[in-house]
Image 1: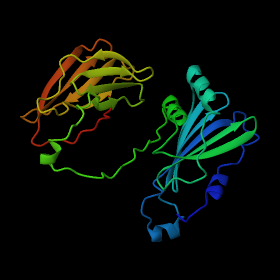
Image 2 (image 1 turned 90 degrees about the vertical axis):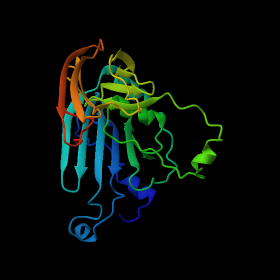
Image 3 (image 1 turned 60 degrees about the vertical axis):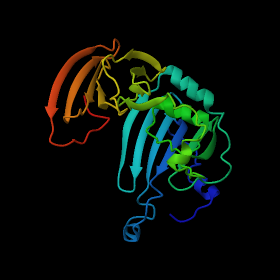
Image 4 (image 1 turned 45 degrees about the horizontal axis):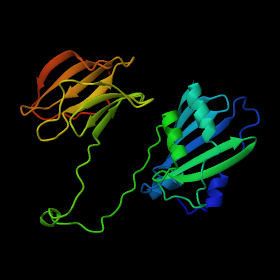
Length: 283
């Protein structure tokens, strides 16, 4: 992608909503991704310069309707509209005038999140780095359940100690935070695996612990025993695919989400080798 100034880039997103739109957007998020991927010159000449990039868009309308879309050089798809919960929409509205400045500089390729807000007929555009998003934007991503990836900065260590030297360092105790987190497809429920070996089912709306799965624990070597989870459509039950044990055996258990009690257990299938698994199977 050719170099473009901040002003020219922002100008492409600064147009007002269509005058004939009965439910205009008050907030639009555009996550521009893959524009840091290598460019095949031949394909770029045949299609367009930024053919490899994709844009994930989240739109919140004046009446609280939420819509999402995915756009690439060769395709576009959307999920239609859904009405945000009243409390979520009110919280989003309260944040629309709290966004900090973006410094007038474009983030590096692969990092851009364009935020467009229209209030009282005035449109304002910011371009933030997805590796350094303001708290208000992070809150909106949570409230809209946007499928926009937040990046984690990577830092090069200033020094690497050999194991024999590291033993003499005054290191803080090991973190007791989560070792892993597995979520439902709609991000409303999840299972937190703590460093203590507890499997906690959580409600993602208010972060309450709904139950603890009794009978599941970390393996003695500290590895995660759960391979994947899947919640039932109504969220009342949870299927857990766990293992393998030392004999390459896995098994499937079904749990009551709210009580943490096991409902069914299916033992086991023996594999000649470790199968590929996913954290997001289908119920």
